[in-house]
Length: 126
Image 1 (spheres, one colour):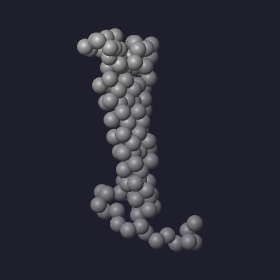
Image 2 (spheres, rainbow, N blue to C red; image 1 turned 60 degrees about the vertical axis):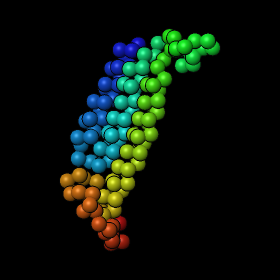
Image 3 (cartoon, helix red, strand yellow; image 1 turned 120 degrees about the vertical axis):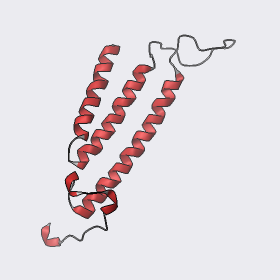
Image 4 (cartoon, rainbow, N blue to C red; image 1 turned 180 degrees about the vertical axis):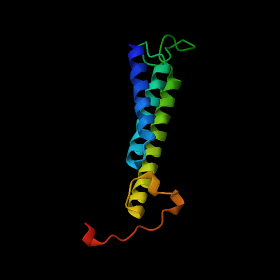
């Protein structure tokens, strides 16, 4: 079953890299979000989730025996927060690029600093 999860995680990462290499800013955004999900799955697999026992040290014991590693769980929670913050930040940049350049093609946007105030659209163009 672990090999199946590893193949699924690798497939997600491969799809994410394909989307990131696109010139469409929305695909790049979704690809980076998908990459964060793939990284979470691969971190989860690194935690050796073979036991159904919760990661709680029993009374009188000095160490955790035969349970999942709580450090991996903390790393996954941190990666979820960082991935969400990155997704929101990139969504703001995509929205800003759309409003100033009226395009979501990466070739039309030079740098984030070049994104000036939004252009006024002519109502007749709609």
